[in-house]
Image: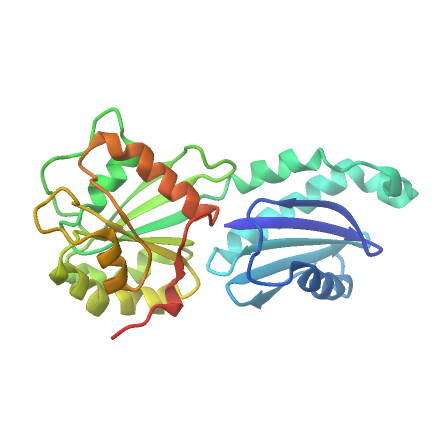
Length: 293
């Protein structure tokens, strides 16, 4: 997931677009550090710097520094390609201005539409993780196939399912992965979830399921997606004896949000939950910070 772009020349900001602000670090200090490194690069060479859960990918072209801020967990290859495309487009539109010196009085804001279009071409991987029968497939279909309605019968997912999701989260498009929750598939999750930016733990709100999640799912997620954002869905809240979202959150050690995935009326709530997680407008944890018993 690409979060920001900054373009500098002679210490001045030509353009910036911040989709999701970095709330953990001093962004100005980081930009000074990264732009200084970018100035030293050979023309069109790309490098990157990792700080906590972020990666800063940068390059230098025509004495102009380009810095893309991304989730550290996101695909380096895809963002590398995106950065090359962004710089090529910028030079196509503005190289003459840069060489003539007219850049000092130029408004570069129109570049924002191209930047966001490029961002939208890289689907954000969202992983639905949990034991079999907790409602992962139902949540996937609730989000992506509303006209058909969520399934009422349990059909096990073998290995994993995938679907693209577009909604009120521009410029992002989500690539939703429903991970097979049978025990024999969990150790194979690593083949699917690489480069995942967000994880949603789906629980059926029972003590046994929470115990399984912590014992079986958490170690795999921590090993494969240590920098991803994570929340839990306390599903099946309509069933007798279901633990409250607050209790599920306490037991799992991550923020949990109540859901009834087999009810069409919950679709708006589910989509808004995904949007708020993407834009970091709700409480979440980082996978690597989860405590495993």
